[in-house]
Length: 109
Image 1 (cartoon, helix red, strand yellow):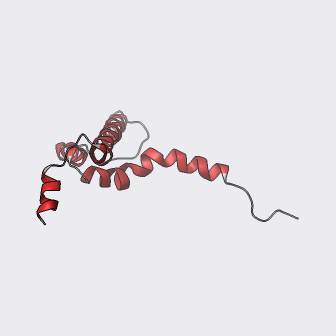
Image 2 (cartoon, helix red, strand yellow):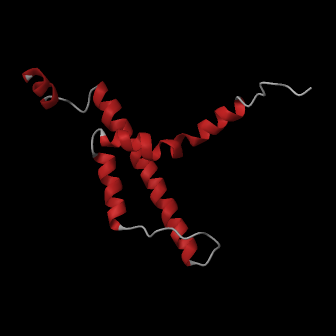
Image 3 (tube, rainbow, N blue to C red):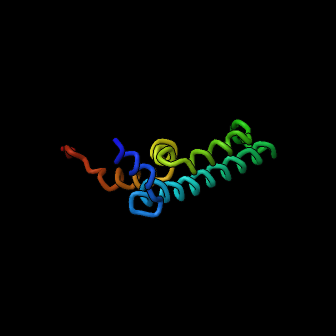
């Protein structure tokens, strides 16, 4: 039990595990949430100018703070990257693979 405690206590965020479980998800979450916030601000401005766009909820301080907490918290940022931002960031790749593999299994007669 004590060795697990020492392992957790001496965990360095600069090693390989730290890079893959903290720093890379932190950077990707920061970029993804920044882009999402900018798009939301642009959408709200377009709605206020009377352009033909649907209404979205207002951007609040709580929303921005929650995105910051999700970004900087270890392991939580991996979950946020996987479930909140994953499809938004990798959706283009999914569509490309579907396009490449769009081969009919049964040909027309």
